[in-house]
Length: 115
Length: 108
Image 1 (tube, rainbow over the protein chains, first blue to last red):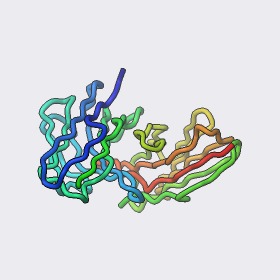
Image 2 (tube, rainbow over the protein chains, first blue to last red):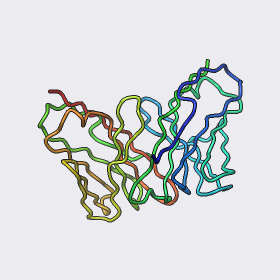
Image 3 (cartoon, one colour):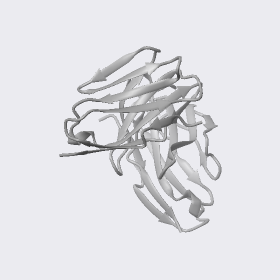
């Protein structure tokens, strides 16, 4: 089944403790992206990648890092999480930059709470 | 800048129609529409690539007015399963930027 897999689904952590949210897709998509979703603010892009070793900042990149060493994986790293990073996070992938005929495929989401 | 969607929320009875609008301050290369059920991932509905294009499947369709930098989503004879939050996504250059969202609730 074609899908984007995110782990974990839920995570509670303490301020300052480094964490990684994994994202993997099995569709051979070149384009991958991370979004955070907060009430009233919709989906805001954190980082995106157009191909292996090519990443760029989205609209809200502060406090986050990403890497794209393999085409299928695009982990999101929070080096020193803070409470304002408490949010619902989505990874998405697409065959084309603009989404193409099939749009973006989203993972199931990771609900992160930083205390 | 995020595209602005209107209305912010819609409440319908089954069988009623609704229109959701998406307006961008920047030129649009394409427009996406997604639906998200509470606590779930957004699901792709359709993409409109050209100005003047109209698309649809089942009883959900959309139009794209490139000149006005607007798109509209039309839900006809709504069903309970249509409930959720609808997002438009505007694509320009290398980003897909999502709109503010419209929450749709359909009651029996």
